[in-house]
Image (cartoon, rainbow, N blue to C red; front, side, top):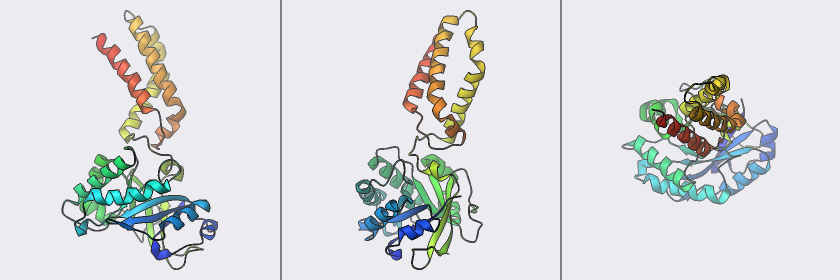
Length: 288
């Protein structure tokens, strides 16, 4: 598992070369808090960590307890991400750090995520940082499924990579706040990536796990069953076109199918696949 840290202005200006030399592969950096507050160390920390070879991501500390509108907080965060180019392929997804409560907290967080995605071109993968207890009490796995987010779970005193809340949506585990890392003065939060780090940094195709399962089924069924379609009797002409369409789908899937098997975020030309399948559905309807 890859090891990382997360830092804020409290850590000042780490020696990122020493951090990387100490085996740290990734870092989340605090960008903003509430409405209008921006970390004074953000630019330097972010650029220096990147220059030292760390995979980086940005997080926003949410303050719904102050009555802030979720959209306003999302705007504050997005205003820091975009100038730095701090999201997309090669970067860790932007993260909402939620540690305080407010009325309708689940709705507040959902609105924040929707606005952030809108500002970041609509299809950005988003992480949510919270403790195991906080997730259980205030958000939950159904909420994560509805908003299609990944979890970064804080749970101390557990074996790295084994937080108390561990589902397929959990990608990071913060296992202590008392880490010692070369190049960082004082203690620092320590994290491990539950999935291969490359899966977190490939951008986002917005496939759900069910989408991936169905695509694998389509691909494997077609690879094993196309000969039966070739000799299918009285509807041979339309079935021939169905065969052609499915071949096109298979060709689109083939380059990334191994990534789909492992639920990784690989861009698989979803628009082209949907167009081909729409044509297939039309051909099938014509035979009814």
